[in-house]
Length: 367
Image (cartoon, rainbow, N blue to C red; front, side, top):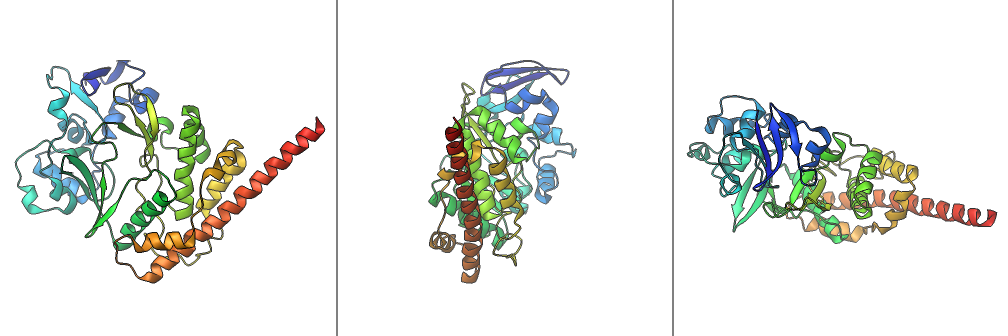
């Protein structure tokens, strides 16, 4: 495999025999900067082969192989959410040729629609639309929107967490309900910023301490934003936070890190599987992991007081505004569940801050 890795029309890496032989350190994706593994980077951009509709999509596009590489290279590894792509040696195309301008296969990717199966071949973003749920990109009024299917409780969880996070002032990807789906505008603006998952920085490590250190090394503000995400995960019991569904936004021209990406992908959280019996949150593992970070790293509690606590009334109001038709008892249980977690977390933060103040006073006395 010989060619170039580009951001828009700027060459940021050269590939020879599958190896990254030279690169622009300021602009290269962090995953490639950390690993130099071009093949793994390309494969990581391919549609999940286990999704039923991904197999239909490949058949409609006459991609006979099940190999991820065949799928991703069909669209030169371009995605909606960043400006990176791969140009093979001898290929004369430019960024305007590979960026996505339509998606004739949206209904096939989302629902397995047979009419969409019979579309003529077209350059589609679905081949690099990652994740395990049936979903699609739709271009509406010049802006890409992600549409994702889910059951009632999955959609309720996604939308409630979105609204609670917004009410608390956190950067959240916007979601609205639409039939049996949730709809979210592309938060990169079609590549006006580049999204890179946390895997570029920490691989597949979900360890809070390792992640906090990585984001702290980028900036204090990034560390605060990471704490916001895992705080919401603890409050709302997001069991499915992994290094592909949180990350950073970078300037596509300079490569500068701008911020954490907004909090997204909370459909396997809260009550997505069922309403738990233990609404009091005793022995809650996600709360335990979050509090463990606050106890082990004295930099974290100092920023934790900036994380606002919700109220029961706020959570209930957000639940009633999701647009998903769930029983009111489910909304009330969600408010009870989130507030039980909030009380545990806030009590611990207060305790840690008091302990830090006492240690500081004792140190001054000894001097």
